[in-house]
Length: 488
Ligand SMILES: Nc1ncnc2c1ncn2[C@@H]1O[C@H](COP(=O)(O)OP(=O)(O)OP(=O)(O)O)[C@@H](O)[C@H]1O
Ligand SMILES: [Mg+2]
Image: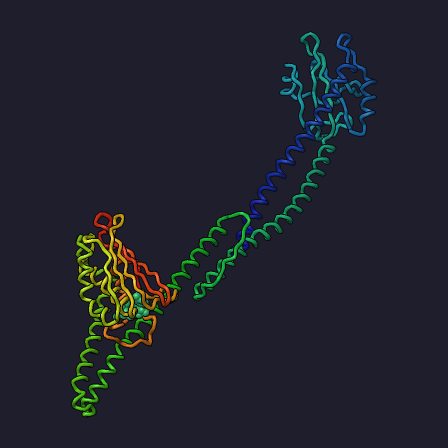
């Protein structure tokens, strides 16, 4: 069965049961009221008769008064009977013989005890002797503890029943009308609920087909379960969109990486191939052969370096490198780097400055530390002509702070954003120099610093210079082996 009908049935069922219960209760309470009113009336009549129609001392009955009363109450069909203490009818009398039946003994016993009795009963109408349903009220009259008379007032139940029937009829009409309203209401409510569920289904269908750019758009004033489900669904969509975007990004990166790697390798391979062909066909003059072989050696070295660096990068990225961390003097290590780079700096007319106290302790893997600083310093020399490169180190709070500042070509904001990417070169037209320039240096540096639990930042101004700042946590605060978060 469709949800719409299920919902309608549920709403309708609830309303139907509620209406039925209310109707039954209403009918019962009205009929009780009507009966009670009728008995109250009859009781009042018997009270009047007790006062006015029977004389307890003379034991006489004012027949005329009773007849007058009956005359007045003719419309309501109310009649009276008066019984003697021996349960024989004293009024009305028909040719000396009482026609009204004696009161049933079980009621008579109650009356003798002084209790009034009110009941609907199938009895003989004393006026016409017919069997009829009536409401009867019996009231005993005592004189100093002795039962004298029983006064009975009765009326046919027809009047009462007609009024109850009328109420029932009105109620039935009201019932029908409310059922109609219930059907319309339950339909509207069910349609509203089902509409929201259908919207969710639609969206799920679209998502299943791979379209994540959809909105659930379920608005609800009361934040109910369906609205909650829609919210959760929307959140799930957000996550799906994010992971989809991440997959695309990864895919794009992988594609870019393959293209870059291929490109990087093709250049030296093409050079080597060209030179080999030249040698094979004797197209290279004898005096240039030595130079060609030297060029090929350089290109092969470059290829080996490229492959090694790629492997290194992957190892660091996948946490396959175990750092042999220890505390040592950073100034000493920096001095070594200065010595190694002295020639390169001189070639570029750069002045190398070391700004550090004699002993600045740092907690790191010494070889990796040198690799990091060497790379950064080498970059600084590479991109600075006739400037100054300052390498500084100082102890900080639970860490060692280092900086490499140059007065070189600097970078734009956009370039700065990308320098940690593999194969990124701000100026791709720059050809292979003696330093390599594969665009892997900083990607590896970043991974290594992260692996140490340290940080690396860069500030750069185009044509003004660049500063790399690094921190290495001390032995107390350094993580065991920092998890790799930056995966490029
Ligand atoms: N000190 C600097 N001043 C200006 N640009 C820099 C500096 N350091 C790095 N860059 C830019 O960031 C890019 C990436 O540097 P990275 O060291 O990763 O690669 P690379 O030096 O080109 O090649 P290699 O893998 O041989 O180091 C450089 O190509 C350069 O454009
Ligand atoms: Mg470099």
